Amino acid sequence: MRIAVCPGSFDPVTYGHLDIISRASKLFDKVIVLVSYNPSKQTACFTVKERIEMINAVIGDYPNVVVDCHAGLLADYLERTGACAIVKGLRAVTDFEYEFQMALANKKLFNDADTVFLTTSPQNMYLSSSMVKEIGSLGGDISDFVPQQIRSVIIERIRPDTSNTKGSK
View 1 (tube, rainbow, N blue to C red):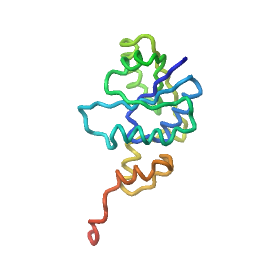
View 2 (cartoon, rainbow, N blue to C red; view 1 turned 30 degrees about the horizontal axis):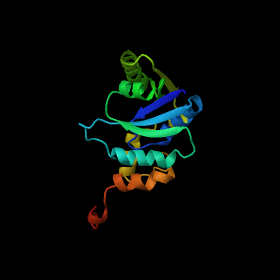
View 3 (tube, helix red, strand yellow; view 1 turned 120 degrees about the horizontal axis):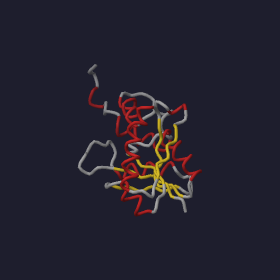
View 4 (cartoon, one colour; view 1 turned 60 degrees about the horizontal axis):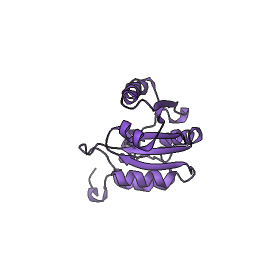
């Protein structure tokens, strides 16, 4: 069985992520969407559990895709699961420089897995989780960026409470 891992923070999952996951699901027998996190860093907007729940809410159309989480080295996770590939989406040349460095490090740590780069679809080239959070926190419409099933959860978390600002402008 050809198993691929799609690692990322997914804070939150976007249509760009789903595009890469969907395409990977056609290339591999099993795709593990891996919520990677560093327990010593508390910078995420959503907890690992919340990110897993959001991803599970939007991957129902992909029977060969599962979600997991991991806080250690990706190479260790690959070896433990028997994965043969890491799938990463690339938006721009700047993504490639960083991801290429990571691919070489992962290959050195676990030689049995290769990194597969998928270029993003043109409509998602500008899309990032950070951008979604910024637009949403400023009251912008994020419906073109994230699936409807998780939109309200994201908005509730990132939009500031305006109930205490009545009368102040």
